[in-house]
Image (tube, rainbow, N blue to C red):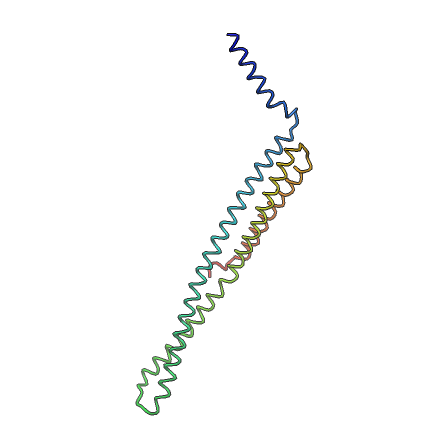
Length: 196
């Protein structure tokens, strides 16, 4: 029985020894909470970076599709114009069906309109891609601020000083400000543009 009591006393002393380093100082607990919050900010910023990259890539793919559509319509328009010019050039020497000439002329007009619409569609992607690219970079800045805040909080924990902790918290605030401003700015830039 004495052995069991002795083991319990050692365990109790060991438990107290682990807490004895705090000496009633709340700084380690506060720094730990700060690090946890900065970790959440870091995770959120990283998620937003990934989202913006995925959106940017998707819109770049869509833009390439629109560019291919524009090129196809432009080539059709040019081919129809050449056919109409060739038909017009041979009209004086041979008997040309007027209905064929009118049909080709209508095709020229239709292909021109489709080419212009595809060009407008293509150009509509530029501000969307630019907005997602810019947002990705700004969210990366917020991510960096959170990472540096975690590093400074870790240093505060190691040296048991408040100054690095305050700087870490300041970087956390900077990260939050960057997240909010970037989110609002991007939403404003994309307002109504993604529907096109």
